[in-house]
Each structure stands twice: as C-alpha cells, then as structure tokens.
Image 1: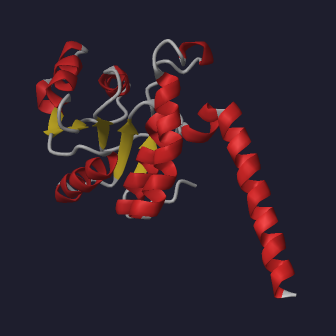
Image 2: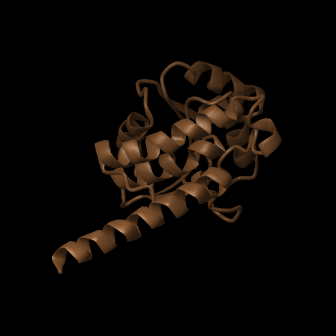
Length: 191
C-alpha cells in the first residue's frame, strides 16, 4: 500500500516537473521575468551589475519618472561604467551610491541589504535584466523579508527574434540552472 502511494506521488511529481519544464522551455520569458508594474515607488532603485549595460539606462528612466530619489549600484567590475552611464543619462552624482564588492546575485543581496538597513530603507525597486529578474527578486526577498522589493527589469533583447543574435538564449538557459541552484545552495525558493 505504501509503495503504491510512493509510486503515484513519484509519477505525479514527474508529470508536474515535465509540464513545468515544457512551459518554461517554450515560454521562458513568462517564467523567469518578473515585473511589479509601473505603479510602484520606493526609497531607492538598486541596479545589479552585469548585463550589457542596459540596466543603468533602465534605472535612469525610472529615476526620471520619480519612482525613487536615489540609485544604488551593486556589483564589482562594471560599477564605474554603470555610474558613468547614469551620469550621462542625467542622474545627478549626489543621487548615486555604489556597492562594489559583490560578485554574485547572492552577494548583491547580502551586501546591499546591509546598506539598506543602515539607511533605513523599506521599499526597494530592483533593476536587472528581464531574464535575471525572478532570481534577483527572490534572492533579495529571501535575505530581507522585512523589506518590500519590487522588480522593474530592463527589457533589452526581450523579443524572441533577438535571443540568438544577442546571446540572450544562453543567459536564459543559465538562469534555468541557477534558479534551482540558488534554491539548493542558499534556500532561495524561485516560486
């Protein structure tokens, strides 16, 4: 009797994982992209490092829409380039803060959350690439459930016809590996 229950559970889980996998494979943007919508405002916009420098451009757009009075860049390596892009896009230097020690999304969250707590920030808009938005949002929420995080990603190379020529397909595949990897390694539930 118990072996039948285990077998049925195994079959059910296998079918659910297969269906979820097929949905994600044929509609990846619907699974890995999270956007909180245009009607959110916050204390700060956090721009995660990486991407093709579309992230600071998106952050500047949001800043000009007055969704937050400040921008915090996080991530080692391209922080100065992203700062220069923000300045070129018209964001004042005194509205930009930089965290430049983190090398991963997990470290982006860990190091940035310390700054958010120190500055008493309660509402945060995360800006990253659309294909990275679910993992980024879930990681920040995991490490600071007391802070309200919103996702407003950059949509560079969002159209399916751009995925191959701009390398987006490879980045999406990596996200499908990193989502369960973050769940296993850090306990970050992707759902």
